[in-house]
Image 1 (cartoon, protein in one colour):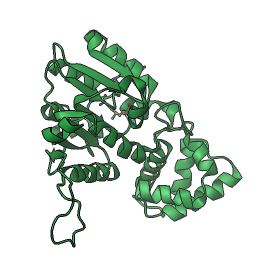
Image 2 (cartoon, protein in one colour; image 1 turned 90 degrees about the vertical axis):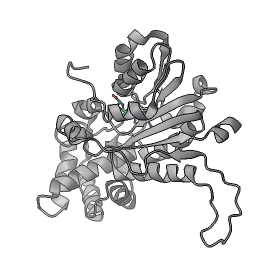
Image 3 (cartoon, helix red, strand yellow; image 1 turned 180 degrees about the vertical axis):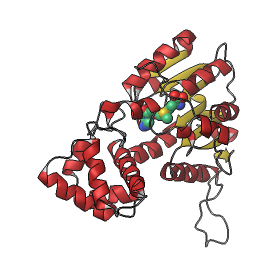
Image 4 (cartoon, protein in one colour; image 1 turned 30 degrees about the vertical axis):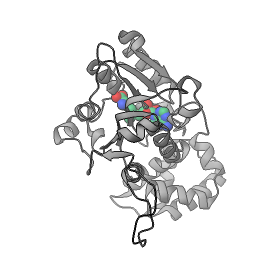
Length: 316
Ligand SMILES: C[S@@+](CC[C@H](N)C(=O)[O-])C[C@H]1O[C@@H](n2cnc3c(N)ncnc32)[C@H](O)[C@@H]1O
């Protein structure tokens, strides 16, 4: 790994204030990255707080492993997708007194030229967060035109999705789309020339990345698996970086907090639903101007948190 910092943790003070780590408890960092949040959780829960750290990227596990080595057996790191917690034998019995999901990619991943996340530098079009799955170039070479359009529209919220999908299909017939520069040039050629062209490129790159890593499916599934493993009064903190992720988190938290799921036209409540959690953030917490000035990648961050209710946790 290069000497520069692996990743600057975002909303660090706010995350620790929300999680309130204490000694003797066990915390989950499901998106370890460079281990910045994990380190702060371990420091705040000294001398005997424990941390389980997950990441689908083996490089993150390796880097964070070195960074957190000084905490000895208070730390356990696993190279796994948080959507596979229930299938990870090591976590079969695991329960947590607090959990963090700091979504998306780390700076190290974006800045690592060979991984092809960034449209700012030419690289092989890969975009996988871990070694498993299909690289972006393969997705672009086989996906049906309608699928490409849907990915770009749904995950990129890009209004020129159809034109861009058509351009991708036309260009891949001439020659495979194997590099970030080529994809960027195709997008630029497909949308009207304007100052917004680069925004379309960014949205397409985001969309392809989300599809390659199946990020929204993983988020929906991971949230459920983690929530079921929270002890009474445990808090779950999620930091999202775009509106699609944030919407999933907001809806899920609202669902958990609701004490009725009857259709709205039913005059009286007939369901047995009980509220499973309290939402601690009616509005998401955003980074301060000072944080954004120091770390522009924090700009779009939105933190939401819930606290698991005691009576529900006691029954599980
Ligand atoms: C924004 S970074 C986390 C940074 C970290 N909080 C820190 O302080 O350095 C997000 C990390 O989550 C990982 N990640 C994203 N989705 C994942 C998933 N479904 N399962 C496991 N790790 C995931 C990425 O590989 C990346 O390393």
